[in-house]
Image 1: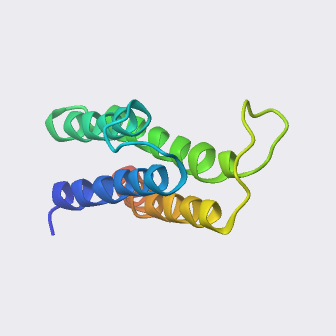
Image 2: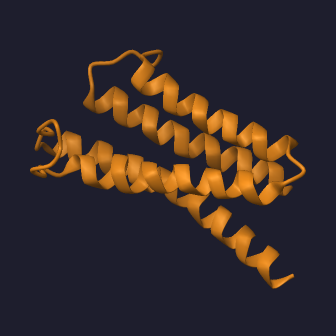
Length: 122
């Protein structure tokens, strides 16, 4: 499978994880800004990576966005932390939504890191 196709599939999985989380945890439409905005950022970074002659900056940006979604969206925002401006629901359904969200980021994270390691070794 070509690298571009793998990248597109893993970006789609990561974005879908965010959508599933928002549908399970939040009373939002898939077209709500809280869902559509992050998905459009994934899409924009994927397009930038596909058309850019400078692959490194676009891949680093996609990696940063994936890490933000994994750490902040998937992990930290599920916890009842004192510094958050909200108190997240502490239910099995909510935690399951965050597990799905987090796991959906991992294929893209792995692909980006492996790709960067290969390029660094070359």
